[in-house]
Image (cartoon, rainbow, N blue to C red):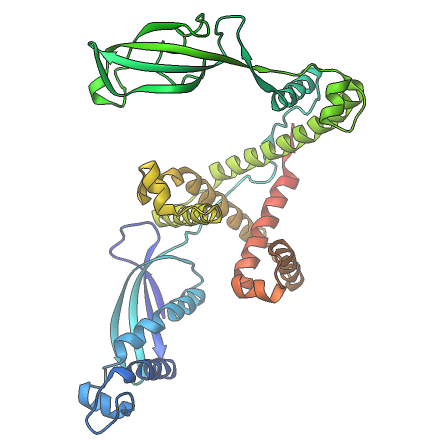
Length: 426
């Protein structure tokens, strides 16, 4: 087996891998193909599926099963060759058989491998911690959120519509005196100030009262989605049926008893201070993690193959598809409804995919430079944790997660812990 830089280098870290498969391995693969294909082969004098391999090879050539056998050998042979060469294959560009016979076969693969990166100054990264001070303003903001969740919608009939109200209207739009498609609706609930309608529409409903009929004039934006309406002046005839508003509860002891197990407002505020303090601490810790991650991505150096970003984006699309499936949604239906295709979906994840790849490479590089290792006990403990998380037996988890992959993940975690431990927090 040999590894050399490819002469047809279209991407970073492209190499040619020449691999030899020994005769015993190849013979087993050839025999396996024979057993699978013999049922489809007719040889005079033998029942279908019963012809000896030697006769089939004599009739059709000794290499009749070679191609399928080589195809079956490629994955494991490439894996072992990459392991021997101490590289991680990112993508297989092409595979070409060089020679094959009873003593085995040799093939050449053009592969893109994970790059060897460099990183410096990763210990002692300076980060700034966000304030975790719990102020009265923050507590009051929390109370307002709870008031909003416990609000009710009531009908208003003693005043005109105001910004923030929900109005129930009929409307019909006209351009040059003629109605247009999509410009009419009945009993439509429109929240004033939501910005859901074109500029000027919602603003002109403010000040009108229940049961009032009136007209408003607007101009469609020059970049409006409907070509025939771009930049056009329009008149809308409106009938206002109902004005509704959000009614918030008073903040007093009765309110506190309704939304918590506390009896007084002062007791409730003390509880909210603890809630807010916990949230601020979590947000501050997350922000520190983000600052460290961003700095590591800046510090890591090396030529990263585009294929790594593409693979990561594909993984993220698969994660998204699994989440959709758990909600009973088919990804093809999702793309149809949103007007997206698979490339647009991958494009959504491109930036995050790049960040994930860079951060992972940075941490793998740190783990290598720091000679970080994990013990068998560490791996078994992680299997146990995963088993509890997935509610599966540990042995079942091992069928899905290879110990080598788990070991790499644990090294990356240890590298991140080291960087965080040595970070200078201001």
